[in-house]
Amino acid sequence: AFRLEIPVDLRGRVPLNILEFLAATVAIWIDIHEEGTPLECYLCQGDSTTAAGWMSKSNFNDVNPAHMEATRKLASILLHSEGLLYSQWFPGIENVVADVLSRDFHIPDDKLISLLSSLVPQQIPPLFHISPVPKEIYSWVISLLRKQPSTKQSPKEPQRSKLLRGRDGRSILHPSASAT
Image (cartoon, rainbow, N blue to C red; front, side, top):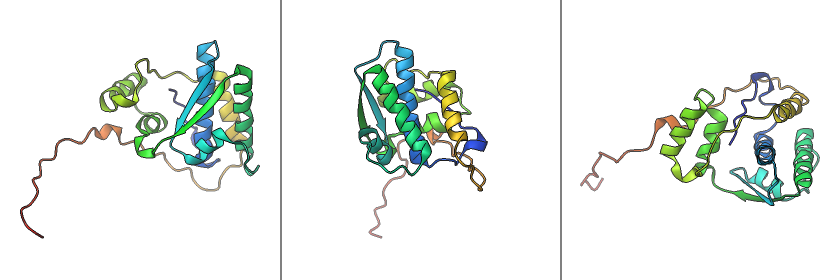
């Protein structure tokens, strides 16, 4: 996994679906960077149906230059590594890890890994770790966002995830015997 906090002045420059697509592209790029030897296939999972669809087809309109540049970068990365891409969508309610990684920058990595391991162990693979984003990748993402027109709206403060609220405990309420 990785964490990349978007600077305040660059927030809101691209739609959320494009950020989701960028995150998938960066995740694959970091995997290739860390592995050294490219893998045959890269699994890309996400809760954005749009971004997942973009991973498996390229017949979209050239409406957003950031989207086109990110798509070309992903294609370049995959062609260079000679790897295949397998895209998989899953419901957003199950996207706890990605939500936490993209929203809870106030939690240090080691504490975050511990929390995720205890609260959503089914989503944490055995060798799970949070990789630093290499300078080349960080620079590319920031450069891409800087090229986009700034918005006239004030950037929204990202909402923190619900992770620190913990798990729901056992209900202490007993159903009423009343018919109403």
